[in-house]
Each structure stands twice: as structure tokens, then as C-alpha cells.
Image (cartoon, rainbow, N blue to C red; front, top):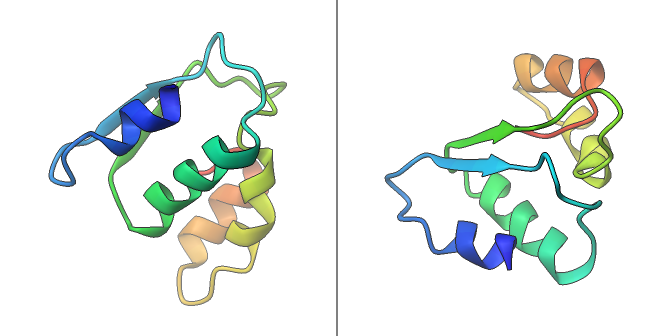
Length: 82
């Protein structure tokens, strides 16, 4: 339900996602989140500490980012995508 709500946020708006009570994101919901990040939408994550595994599945893709060393460095430092 959270992924669908985020997908409906207008592209011009920043999506603020609070994952403080979220379980790891998998399956279709993960695909929705991946499309949001891949589309270059502005996303701000809240409620993520170092132990949260919510978006860890996106980390390997961020590490392969070419031409965006800042994004790759961020992915190496934190187990989230932004």
C-alpha cells in the first residue's frame, strides 16, 4: 500500500517516505520503489537507521552507477537508496 501511495505522488513533488515501521520491501512493492528511483524522482527517506533492511535490495544497483560517483559513494556508506 505504501508503494502505491508513493507512486501516485505527482512527479514534480518530493515523495517523503517514512519507513520507521516498515518491514523489508519485496516483490511488487520493491518494483514500484525501484521505478520511482530509476525515474529520477525526488525522494526523501525517513525512519531509516543502519539496521533497517528495507531497501537493501537496491544497493547493488547503486554501486554500479556510472557517471554518478556521489550516488555510488552514498550507496557504499548506507544500506539504502536515495
